[in-house]
Image (cartoon, rainbow, N blue to C red; front, side, top):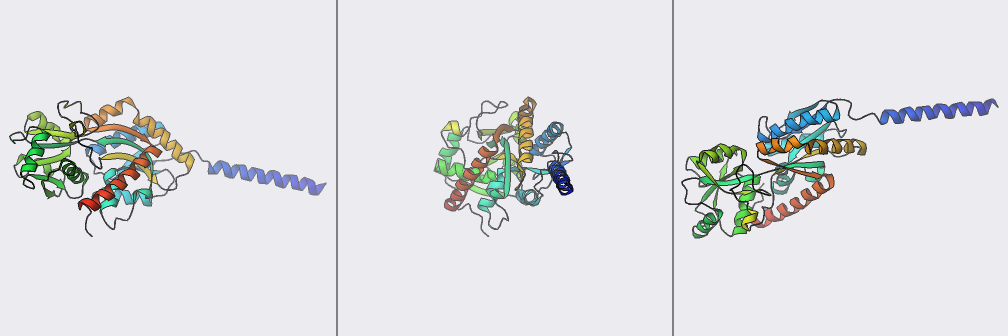
Length: 325
């Protein structure tokens, strides 16, 4: 009898231990500060949008969400840091297609690939404007293409080497059947200055830095690379409506986590991010910095990244865009 009683007590004790262990393992997430890694420099247009979302995400999750800027090496610094972080949900990141798709596909010896990260969702894409001085002879995209075919390689355009802008221009020229001379730039901000100064014929830039010059009439946008026309400049046509395919890569941004997130943690983050991204005020905030709200859930976003990587890898091989070692 005593043996049976002892056995019952032992079973009861073990049951309590198991229940306590399960409860501890299932500790409510989140219970402390979350670090939001940004591969962008502080104060930039994407950074402004990230900080707005981090405030709303903090309210949604009930814990501080602190932006940590880790820019450098074309986005590789922030991306690498995120990959090496602990997969517990307390470190997530805002990473662009330039970092997670373009770099691994075109630059040899980059120590990561897109599959080293766990995509949570896509939240925005950037509008690119192709522009010239107002005094230039080109009034439309058709003018530029026609002149480029008459004078192959004589019209100059500027872009940082092996950037999304560089890729977009090379992709556009290939589709349109003409060529311009690429002038390598050290920073994207140089493009506008060089075109205004007459040192470049054509420039490509995200729309936000162009707004002042376009409104002042010193620059003319020939077309934009975007899903649809932008409300601030409804007269500027998109590349697609002019009959050309979109470039092999657009600049988009999403949230990622290190590989190995527990499913309950991932689900909590995904639900909170979706709610924040679909907040009505976010679209206006993104419009203000020339970003288009474009939400995609985890699986659809992962599929887009995989398909873009395949396309860019093929384009890089056939076009000579692949960066040498």
